[in-house]
Length: 212
Image 1 (cartoon, one colour):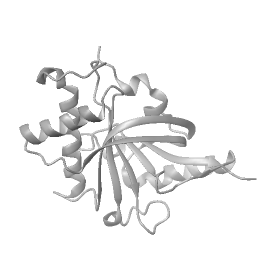
Image 2 (tube, rainbow, N blue to C red; image 1 turned 45 degrees about the vertical axis):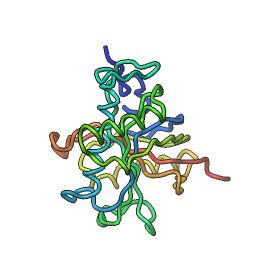
Image 3 (cartoon, helix red, strand yellow; image 1 turned 135 degrees about the vertical axis):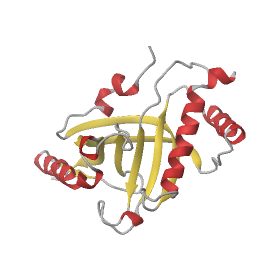
């Protein structure tokens, strides 16, 4: 049976619908950076998703292409994720989607090296004629975070984030958003196929202990 990150690492992908603290270790990702309204047809965000999935599945199917990666094992492609922020705005203003900046990512298995990533980029550009120049191999350790399962439309996230902030206040933590630590979402539902009220999204925020 193929290795499924969501099932094997439930503490990172399947939190409860109440806030909890988690220490997230270093992980490697395929990443594409961009800005603008993610709902814009033909916009940067939707183009980034095409690049990410093309690379992710090329790596997953690499044995069929005759390319060998040391330590390769069968696995399910992990879910789409995103790091989001808006310059000059504290937190997230969902009424100003055009001001979004983001890094869209898909986790890579640990056996995938930078050389393997470069092979996948060349393979996608050669076979699928997709420009992957914006794609990068990103290593990131989020560290101490608070997370929760949000169920419902993305625009309803502020109410869920309020629960997270209340939890931090009650338990001696505070948000620790920086240029390297961002609002993080993990998409467990395909918004094209699932009704908005049933969408499941992991929301994760970097935190630190509040100083006395």
